[in-house]
Structures are given as structure tokens and as C-alpha cells.
Amino acid sequence: MSTPTKPGTEPQKLTFHTPQWVSLVAGGIAGGVEAAITYPFEYSKTRVQLLKDSAIRTSNPLSLIIQVARQEGVGALYTGCSTLVIGTTAKAAVRFVSYDTIRNSLADDRGVLSAGRGILAGMTAGAVESVLAVTPTERIKTALIDDAKGARQFKSSIHAVQVLVQRRGITELYRGLVSTMMKQSATSAVRMGTYNVLREAIKSRGIKPNMFTTFGIGAVAGVVTVYATQPFDTIKTRAQGVQGAGIAEASRSVIRDYGIRGFWKGSSMRLGRLLLSGGIVFSVYEEVAAILSPGKYR
Image 1 (spheres, rainbow, N blue to C red):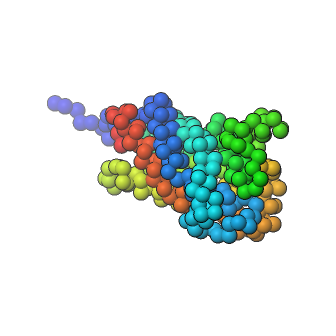
Image 2 (cartoon, one colour):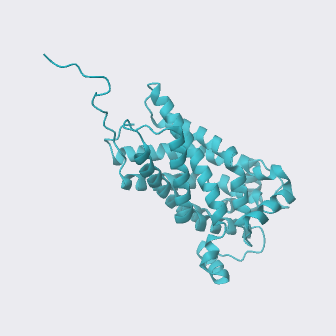
Image 3 (cartoon, helix red, strand yellow):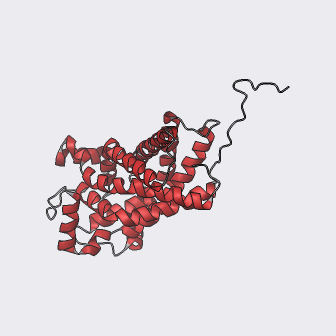
């Protein structure tokens, strides 16, 4: 006669943890693809956030892109693009490997991550990527776009690095580190946290994640991220212009030029990018990870 299984003693469901190398490779590919596709939105967002530009008088992202293409050529929309693609590849790789590592340690026996722990994992991943990848590449990209408005002193991304380092030393590439870390930690916490909550919600309703549902919840996470973290992004951009500025000085310059609403300057441009990038980066990541680790439960 068999002994009935007592409640709570059922075999636990095995949970597959994504290997770190898979997170690194899949995250890097996803980041590079996303940056290359959405860069014109990033360019327009950064340009409108910098000091008043008499040549460009619109906050509509598509209108600004068209104006720049007409006045300066289509190539101008990709100023600093190579730097951002390289930086985003590294950033996404670091973000996903950090997030997945922390997620694996914080998830329960069923592999489920609570909302609070998802936010914590995202915040930590954002801080790590700020130091290892984001700040130097964002500094160069922002300086290149700022420099392109007037008499150009930078010939290329490499030349910009040389000039900035010769001018003030290697620490010049880390100008805006604090504001960047604030922005990336907040952005990653909101983005990864929102994505995790939505993904667990659809799984709890018996909906199996696929490319289309992943793109959808990634896009929603991008929209939430924009409006929750835009002030951090605006301050970071001002701090990383050609001349550079501290957090307090950057904040005062935003209020002086545009008032309190200026902290959300460029949000429509960033919305255009993150709406697409949220869908692209998560769907590409999940698909690449599934190919590299076919045993993963999704």
C-alpha cells in the first residue's frame, strides 16, 4: 500500500538557469541590433536636450529627423552611431549577464522573481553597466552630437577620445558618471522590473511567451521607463556635453532654459526609441538565448 504524499512534499519543479555566457552573447547581440535600428531617435533626443539650437525648432521626433536630414544630410542622423552601437552591445551584454546572475540567486524554487526583487536585480545591473560600459561611450556620443552643432573639433569617435583624454586625462571619459549611474540604475530597475512583472503575469494566465508577446511587453516596459526616468536622462545629457557640467550645474541649466518641464525634454524622442528598443532587445535576447540554450523553460 502506497503512502499518500503529504502536502508540501511534492517534487519541486526543476528550473533552468540561463548560463552566463548565453546571457553575455544574447545580450550583446540584442543590444547591437537595437542600437543600429533605433539610433536616429537617440540622435534627435540628445540634440534637443542640449543647449538651445537655433537651427532646430521642433520637439516632434519625426519632424526633427526630417529637418536634420534636409539641412545636414541623412548621414548626420548617424553622428556618433558607431560609438553607441559598440557601447550598447557592451552595455546590454553586461546588463543581461548581471541581471540573470542576480535573478538566478533571488528567484524562488519555481524560478519566479517577485516584483521587488526584479526591481532590485535591474537596479544592480544598471549600476554595473554604468561603470563598465555606459559612461565612456555615452560621453563620447554626446560630445560628438554636441560638437556637430558648430565648428567641429572632433573628426571621429577615436579622435574625440584622443582630444578629451589629452585635454583633461582619462577621467574625462567618465564625466557624468554619477548622473549616468543614477539614470541607468533607475532605467534598468524600471525596465527590467516592469518586463519581469508583465512576463510573469502572462505566464500565470497560461499564455506561453513567444516573439510577439515578448515584443509587446518589452515595448510597454519601454514606455513606462521613459516617463519614469526622463529627468535622469536629461541631466546626464547636459552633464556630458562638450564642455561638461556637474549634476547641480546641469540641473540649473535645464531649469534656466526650459523650466521644470525641461526635465522631460526629449521624452517624445526617447519614447520613439524605447518603444521600439524595448520590443527589439527583449525579443532578440529571448530568441538568441533560446537558440543557444534550447533546454530553457520559457
